[in-house]
View 1: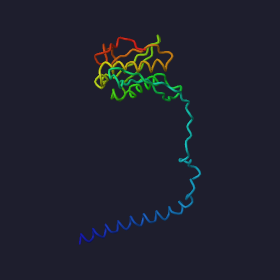
View 2: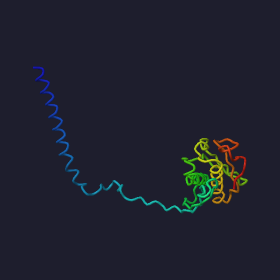
View 3: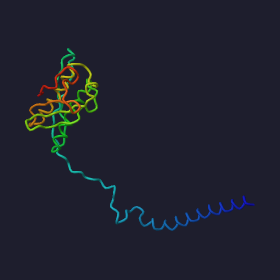
Length: 189
């Protein structure tokens, strides 16, 4: 008898839920008809296109290194033009340029970013803080090392009138060399 009572109570609960759901649906249905095809007057149209102000762009020159086809130990500096938003923070622009220089040299240096920060000194020197792991990621030898440093320096000095020379540090600290070949005490142009 207890089993039969449990089944009846469960069935009664299920029927009550179904009945309440139907009544709620029927009472809501007429109020929904007034909004069919028309957005409610007090709700803004969220699908309207957002018009963003056009940012003025400037052309920047990015230098990168490439090994010579005839003599692989010879580095050839090449350049490309890219667009960058005018008026951006000079530090952000310098970081973009230095990282782009490394990315464009991609087949010799399989590196994600390679540059942590770029600092500007009042005497016209830019200090480029290279990632500590960069030497391990750099392919090649003296040629790729020199090409990487020269391409970053050339990119920065060409795109900033205020930068006359570039000095490199490694992982936030002075280092003797990048990967054992080129002295980082040297200023690059």
